[in-house]
Length: 414
Ligand code: HAM
Image (cartoon, rainbow, N blue to C red; front, top):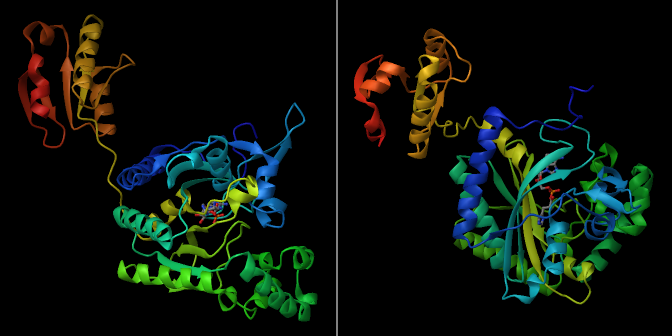
């Protein structure tokens, strides 16, 4: 047990860590050109933030949160997603008072007590963006464009954009009546949680993972048929903009998303198997729900890093390999140790990736090690080499050896 990590968690090291760094690097580079600033919020927040923000009747809040009382008897929750914390930070730090819009990106852990399986973890990681202060569909287009660029740079080709509109509070009132009427006829087929949800929040039934609920949902009325003029115009403008931007999309009236805060647009990028890689949408009422003095529209998305890595593997995309060690500096004899290590440091300062011996190994063992770590070149430094300021540089790929001056060796790598 002591050497076993908790179910649904992952250790990040080696190749997976390298891939994650590349993914984050591409995301950061794109966010920079889109003038989107990074935010880091706490790993835990007051439980009420998620109850209010994500919604009491969602699966996330009802079944999946890691909630506990701290030593001061406050109810604390490990964040199950990134939006609620970002909204809290936007409000608490008065970012709304600055010139709008405010565009924030984050990399965050998220904790959900879900049944662990491929692409579904109890601790996962998201790259997310929250765009505050614009009610225009151009804000959605900005995020979708960035996501399209992001996947293109990663080399992913299989993800398809699905969009839908679930309307605003006004549309929802009329839609809920129609949905309730439909569900009442089939109430006996609903799972116990959904029977409860029927009165409180029938929309949540549409993303229930229970098999019998799923069958029922297929023929349920669709939100898109109940949009008021403003929400319909918004959706039409979004579709026009995407078309003009040459971004392919499919209207998928089945998307409602599993979190309560969405209004109008919801979208997902799904892979060839129909598995969701990234999800997001507009949430024009959430800021107001958390602080009733503010009324600020917003839109955002979250992209699971683990799902990106799975998809890269599924599509056979090879990311850039980790940079190899430029030079292995072997040390011959104790007396040469300090000077050889100074030599190593000089080359590292010049930007070379350099490795050396820390185990007092024999020269033969050092060369074996250099080969194992894939060093491109090796040089062995002993007292003689230091005295004469020259040593044999070996190209490990060709086996070729050349005598080089030690004080100018970095020039060979420029
Ligand atoms: P979400 O759809 O719940 O939305 O999660 C966003 C993404 O996180 C998913 O599309 C998936 O890639 C990844 N994800 C979610 N749960 C897991 C899990 N258990 N294991 C692995 N990956 C997972 C949100 O979280 C919203 N905050 C997105 C958003 C931001 N909407 C507006 N702004």
